[in-house]
Structure formats: C-alpha cells, structure tokens
Amino acid sequence: RLFGRRNGTLEELQVSSPFGQMLAVLTIQPGGARLETAERRVFAAADAEALMREALGYELPVTRLASWLRGKPDASARV
Image 1 (cartoon, one colour):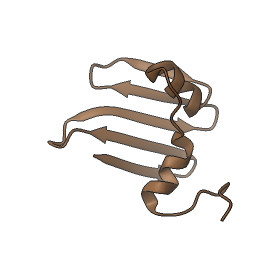
Image 2 (tube, one colour):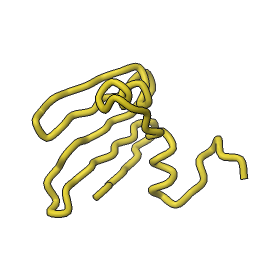
Image 3 (cartoon, one colour):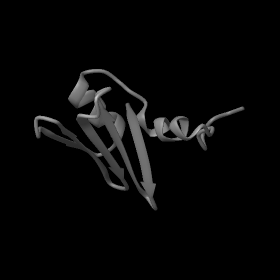
C-alpha cells in the first residue's frame, strides 16, 4: 500500500505491506531526500532520484509519483 501526504514543500510517501506494516518512509524536501526502512536503515541524498539509485540500485521516478497518487498530471508533464 502507498500513502502520500504533502505539507508545504515537504512530501512524504509511506510504503506498507498489505497488512499495514510500515516497510519504508520516503521524505522529500528542498535540499534533499531521506529514506528510512522498517529495519531502521536510513539513506539520504541530494534528491529523491539519486536516493533511489543509491538505496535500490535502479532508477525510480519518485518526484512524479506524488502527482500520480493524487490522480493529477505532474507539473512538468506535457499533455
């Protein structure tokens, strides 16, 4: 399950198991991104995409994910 929330410039995405157990929390704010896993491992990077490359080993376009979760086009999307 995915749960996202936004408070001003702070965005948070929580990934949970189907039973509600928190698997990871991704926090994005100006100047950096932070990922904390259920095992309390913490990763940090200058931006969310760099963080995903470091933590997962592949690219994941998380900056557009928040808009997708809200059912809205990303501001940079061309329609």
